[in-house]
Image (cartoon, rainbow, N blue to C red; front, side):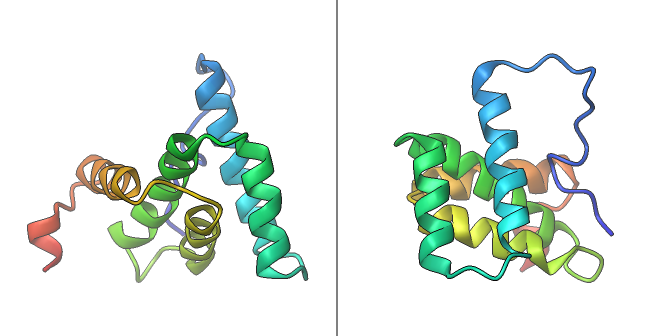
Length: 115
């Protein structure tokens, strides 16, 4: 399985509050993919957790979608589902795209290579 952005972080790394909130959003979105609750309820929960921060939702969504796109044959499809829940919760589309490209650059897969 390919590590998502959050899986690659260690507890010893210093995190600012935004990073901590982003990690919490990612972990909750991943957990929500396994629970038997409606998409609507999952979206509301993530939106409430983000406190209106479309930028944090976008960064979290981009890390999950980017992890999947970097290696779709090896990645957990739940990364894509978690990312989708974060997008539906109000992530800024432009910032999601930027975050996806950032993850893909870090993993060595640039947009022109995927085409």
